Length: 111
Image (cartoon, rainbow, N blue to C red; front, side, top):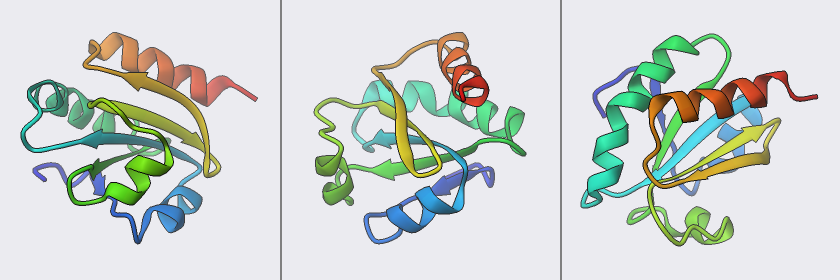
């Protein structure tokens, strides 16, 4: 993982991380996934832009099957957005930065 702003999440740490960060954007990805590699730089940019408000994490589905199965991840990339440890929204597929940013802003302003 190149960016120090991105948290690596594993099955064993998921619960703890989801509760520790009020706003968590979690990218379910795999090394072999082309679209996952396409959005990786976008997520790094967003991690920097939202550094003090939203935690951006990545969970490798090949290495962490339990969490992926728990949330019914069937295609990657899938981004789940959590508020206070509860899934609040999701994005399936490689979307442009503006679309991901809009979901983050919606998460931050929702009550």
